[in-house]
Length: 404
Image 1 (tube, one colour):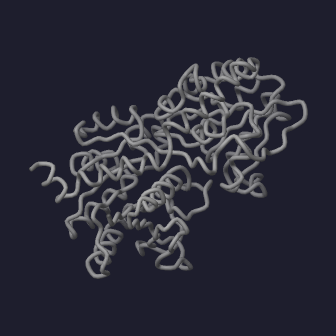
Image 2: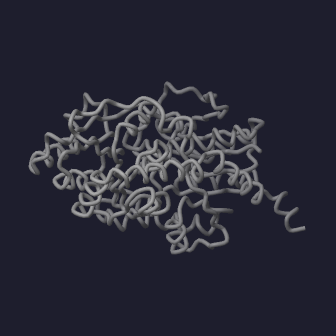
Image 3: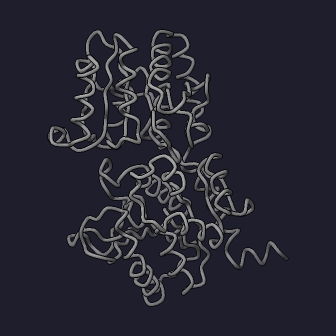
């Protein structure tokens, strides 16, 4: 099949850790590569955010990344991209009609990509599959007035739920949210994200530890909703351990990053500054070594559509303590591969971390179960095969055969 992935702000080529570069970039890159490995012609359409970018890039995975001219060729926050989705759709449709390559199926990632995908796909009569990655209704519920999304986001997502041919949810919690938005259950298919088993595994080097301290590792973009403040507060209840925070700007820029300074000031006020360390952005290739260096990985977001970092830790054989929210309630099996605690509750979080660090046998059992679950249930080839079947279902010719 010819598969067009629409990922308006999340390029599979982007460096991770920036303001709008994270799990969706990884998801699109890995999923596209896995589909290409099955023999499909995959092209990822993403907005051109630099004049230096070539029109197309052929990645080593066999995926072609198409840089779509929509809006200024400069970096823009994703919440500023909506006015450019019309241009994104028109350019893509012209390319498909005039360039000799027309998709059999269009798969949109994020709600604005869905808007562009529907408009472009109607010119070539291709079905549209939608993955939201995050829902505006959930973001508004948790962030309130701090939510910077366009005011029309929830309404647009509701319309997409009624219009696209199929919706791909990443976890059971998202299914419930989609149904509340009006999505027909029959159009929703659950296909979770995966983890690269060649990259993330228990064997290999580990970042050196601080002598005499156990290590609690937490990873993510430096934004409040990721729960870093709760982790810092929890460290008061975890003596004899250091908290290492990976993410944000490069290490040299941490001193000028407001939220990084806030976390360090908070650690000082709580008396744990000597046990809280920010290392800044880390190259993707170095992340397995950081996971392997930890006794436990903590993921304490206020909400989380899926959450790749706990899954990467599990694939490295590291137990996880996580908030009982979103996709984490699917990936982390409470009392088996890790422990789940209420979100935004530093006391419960600290007690769970300390209890696991103090129980070596339970930690070893969790490690083995975490590794087994990641290997059995969350691989990109498995997800690609499920999507391949879904794509064939929504193609008009395939649908006619099934109906006959």
